[in-house]
Image (cartoon, rainbow, N blue to C red; front, side, top):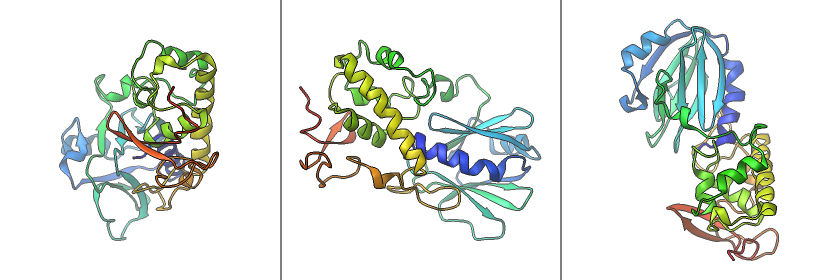
Length: 272
């Protein structure tokens, strides 16, 4: 699933392609990809409008048009946005496409069909309930401590709650907890100040490193030009079942935390 680093990469690489370009057409190939409006209404709303800018919020990519109308793209499990010159064959699993005035086509591909395109025309849009961004100044150690305080749920589950912290997903939670030497099943409220500080630092370090490597391609994620990300090459535990801990050589384990597959080192991340 594209998480914060992947969506940030898509935003940065797609912005030069679409900013200032006029949307000349929209086609929908899977009806449920579009939410919150009828296809005809959405097409009419965006037709002829220029893309003013893109921004990321959590795991959402938001298109802001020149009349202040906005719509979001959420990639869910397998979504991608691919930019190609018009006239080329439509990529497999394309669920929607945007045509731009320079003949570029922007394809939303999604093998599992969970991804969503949705107008930001309602206060009920999920983006309005997201928590703080972990790479912004407001996400301090004290902020993280406040989010953990009084929560008996496993610390990993708390990190995945988008209404508490925006953008962290399964694999980067695993990486951050490993770097901070915290067991994923520890109750969130049990972390002491030193552990909270270590976790705060680890979250930022892991996310920034992943952005530097253009996100992680472990299944379907591709960048707008079709290239893969390289963040997975630096993973210490995530998706490395059967490998050894790079620190102590103990075999890594895979457990389940609230129905999410979770990787850890049982020696470096003691539960007690």
